[in-house]
Length: 289
Image 1: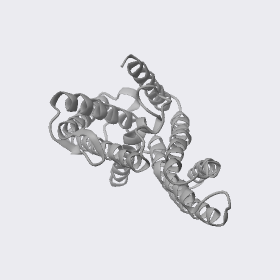
Image 2 (image 1 turned 30 degrees about the vertical axis):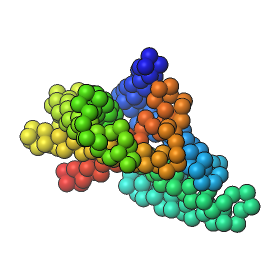
Image 3 (image 1 turned 45 degrees about the horizontal axis):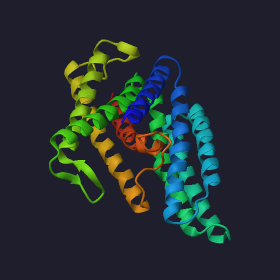
């Protein structure tokens, strides 16, 4: 437990440093965080899937992610954020086809390994590019989006753990994650709600460069509540998705690099799926606003 607490403090410090560096200095800080997770978490998932299926083409994955990032930044510079994301999605499909065809004719790799490599290009790499894009949302949404993705998922995970441990009760999805309870799921949603209300308060007082999302205070409150609850729900969906992948692969954790917390993927599985919801919601807000 002591080691778990120490590691938790380290993770919290890394999150806070990323938030402050991104909001107060430069979005490239968030780039560094997201790209690091693409490589670290992606490698963990590759290693775990090949333990169940066949050797994956790890070098190809690393090169593909690097090329996608270069294309993302270049297209965003000349055409804008959404074209950059479209370019990454297109490249993800192209690289998936390439690695599948490569393994079809390779004497060293099996097609199953190529399929596993292609899978990791779509999860977790592609959602992480969407998460990276939070820092580039316009109309003063970027700061709120970056803070929210860390705050909501952290509170959702914490509340889910403590409420679930205290109340126990019926299991939420025992076939995939035996330890999750209905009470814990409700607690996680409450954590997201608290995060939304906190972000609304921060925007109202223009803290950290944030502003209200809407001119109407009531509309602002409503939107942050929706974002908070939605991000918590998607955080739990991300946890279940990674739990399913681990169950299929027959493992408990993706890694052991973070003592008491598993691997990098174990820490960000909810965060990256939650970020997809936040990005989609705030993009709609941006277009409608």
